[in-house]
Image (cartoon, rainbow, N blue to C red; front, side):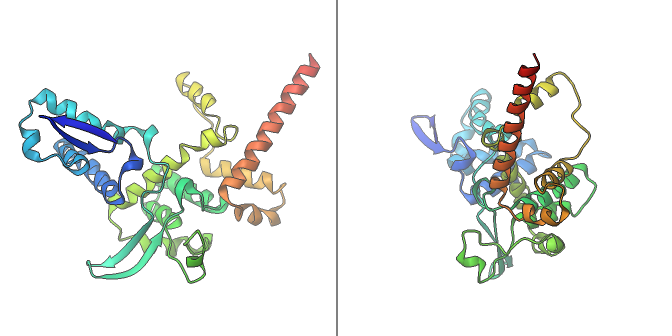
Length: 277
């Protein structure tokens, strides 16, 4: 948490996403999207996060105001996106009275995703980013946030089991959610994935990617979704009857196995190269 002093008064607020409440997170995303068309909307972040009265801010000179607004810079830093799940569940309502159903998320760090679910999410996110599919964002959010059933409610993962054939139905459940909530879901996803290079450094060789960008080199034209499909095929030893088993494996376990396999292969290649010398 961070403390701002104004005329001897202290105002406490967050200095990282993980300190935001769910309501603040959604409100922050809403304000950030509004500020794309109206930059002055950013000033609403301070009363929201620090509860600083507007009258207090109006007494400051322009330089002081700009310095004050700088405490919200972390919201615009992609490297500081939340790795924790700030939106645990989403009640879908008619008006403010009747809750039709509740959507549950995949947990901190995407811990409840299976590999097939991750592959499907990557495919839809890629389509959304390319602008190739207008419904891709709904499909992406629907994959991550799903309703529960009686059996699921007793488990850590409250969501109904994932089925690729039902992605269209999942999308129908989220289609009427406000755009800021869908955007917040996407930001959470990116934030969770930011941890992967540290956890699975051989699967996500961050240093090599950074060097390619610095040198102005283009990465392979292969899409992210195809990369994961190839990984699934490889882990199934090219046996199509076993791919479904790989897809049903927890994401973090799959990435660990991939990470260990790549590490062992690289070590073997180094030994062979040293032997040739």
